[in-house]
Image (cartoon, rainbow, N blue to C red):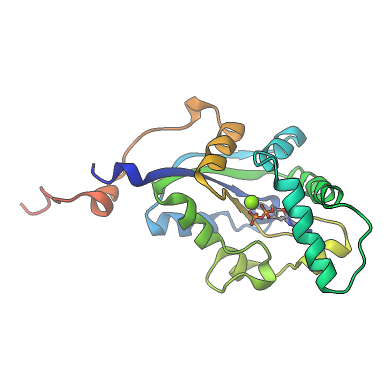
Length: 201
Ligand code: GDP
Ligand code: MG
């Protein structure tokens, strides 16, 4: 197959709200429809350590998330006494509580440009402002304001890796190597093949 150098893997997690709201089929359908392939898929009850590990594969995530939340509060004219790290840690604790509240579906997705394509389908972090047509924009309407007032993680149905390197680390957290299968699908020929021989008889 040509175009192999474009093929990459990304991690999707259908969070507990997606499972509870019976949106598993509706969401995975969108990745399949696009032509992406699942190389690993399973239902998991996340452990606290796994969620912490998952959100700290980027060592700057806690601080950056805290800074982002701080800026949003400042823009609303709210005074903040905590540091960015403290706010980020609080968001992480709320995420751990959310992600361990019930089963999730973890999926290793493979395809050309899989990382940005999956992010595009998923939409931006806050459902209130995610684009229409994205999973977060179409199936949920939670906002930072509503989540923060109750000190809970924003319910946005789905996680998607932000870059190839994080994806590699995240996939290792949720899957054993033997659970990831290398195989081809019939439709891949039509997506990647140059010659398309043997169709006409
Ligand atoms: P994502 O990559 O779009 O999921 O966003 P991030 O990596 O920035 O954050 C991870 C998850 O943490 C998000 O999907 C939200 O569930 C939650 N989260 C991030 N930032 C905030 C915040 O400022 N407030 C609250 N309540 N939750 C947040
Ligand atoms: Mg992220």
